[in-house]
Length: 509
Image 1 (cartoon, rainbow, N blue to C red):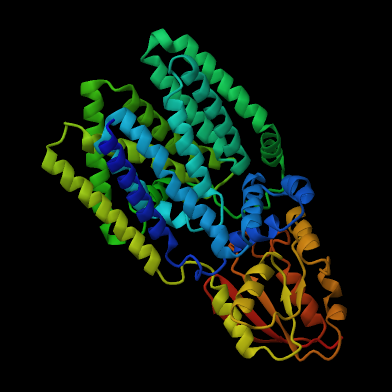
Image 2 (image 1 turned 90 degrees about the vertical axis):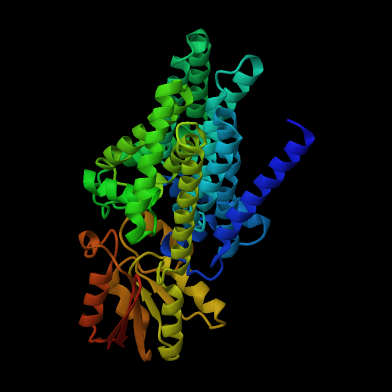
């Protein structure tokens, strides 16, 4: 590569990164702090011994992301903008390994297409704005794919690739349990490539085995925790998630991978994907490219394995499926850059595909009430609360973080909050760490409130029907019963997206 071409590539990739970051910065500081992000803030604020000890035992997600969030917060602060910025940079950073892999396998044109697709993929933009693990897991997976593609290299290059692959698979398992499926799909990705090069097969298998052993060594602790959660009978964390049927999984994949936020334009996006994936198949048929086959195998195996695994331990497919955008982007780019389609048709299809993704990004940013509106709840409380009225939290203590931050952001004093946490081990531990004065039982609420309060507020999250009366998710039934027993009455119910505010008269204890 000449100096001029290297400069053009660097400039172009920098422009793609700038585009990706810009798309992910919109509303970054103004979007409300929803429940899962409050959990990130809360857990990351705990002591290291708690994060790596009891919290790792009761939280279904491994502690890796909370460790990263705690270290990231130490660099600046724990504001939601700064925490989300970690996801923004990780999401945009995934462009680099995707670009490098596409350029090596399919040429420069495919690299630009794949990079642009990741930069503008609406689902990728959406999850790169959350203070959660999914964008970071996407970056780890993309880099692991690049290492896996180089595993069959000669000499030290292959050894370095194996070390990198094993390390990244291990890191992924510290971030999310879905990384176990990602590791399986990466193994398949490597095996399909090795099957086309019999001369390098023995060495490649040895390096792949070494990479897997390294991943197991790095991730031994989260793997044991994941297995313990799989064997647990309570299932309180994910009991509200229904195992997806085939049609449900297909719809979720469509909304996540193919046509995010496109609604009436979804058939057009689906048609473009089918046409380009068909062209990818024809390209493979003509060239017998091992990389194309490996990407197709990785994508197909992931599409099938994730809903199957969800029958045993349900997960939210619209988030965990994010990593599938990586092989999909590479397949689409390879097809568009090949000679299978006429050049003008290929250019038109790529332009339409990127335009649809950009449309999805715009619709995501302009979509009203896309998160729990804790900012609106804080406004109502500030406007209507009387001095001395406390807030009672029968759901998770993480709610106190969302509420307190939005009240403080508006310059308002944070009122007294009383947690009556659900009976799950996770919520009991969270209450101990975040709200030491919590009430372990709703029967003591009336006495704890004391005399002289003008009234009180119950702040609730909307709960799915299967768990709305489950005391491992919420103690609202017990709290309401205690208030009614003490002579209190419900005065008013106010609703905002994802939130219910109940105003009660004071009990006569």
